[in-house]
Image (cartoon, rainbow, N blue to C red; front, side, top):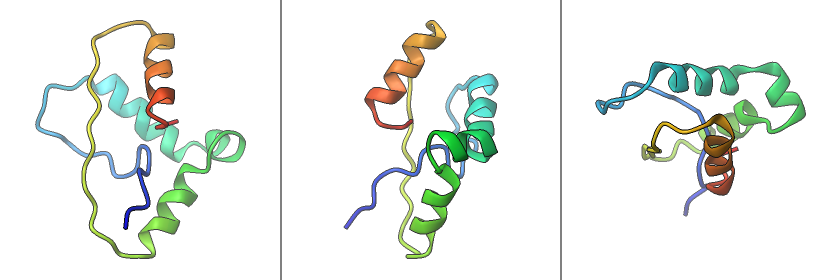
Length: 81
């Protein structure tokens, strides 16, 4: 059984080349009270899934450096936000 993704939960070093700006943006989105209250309760979703003590599997996203609207569209397409 899978509960799907918990977007932006437990973001750690991946070992791949990564941009700190995106990692910090995703971490900030996860803990943002405004995003959790108005758009999607990311913290609550991760806490709910954590109560089942399942095995976590890391997921990664990769994209070329493009414009912000293109990256947001990609994340929405993947239902990460």
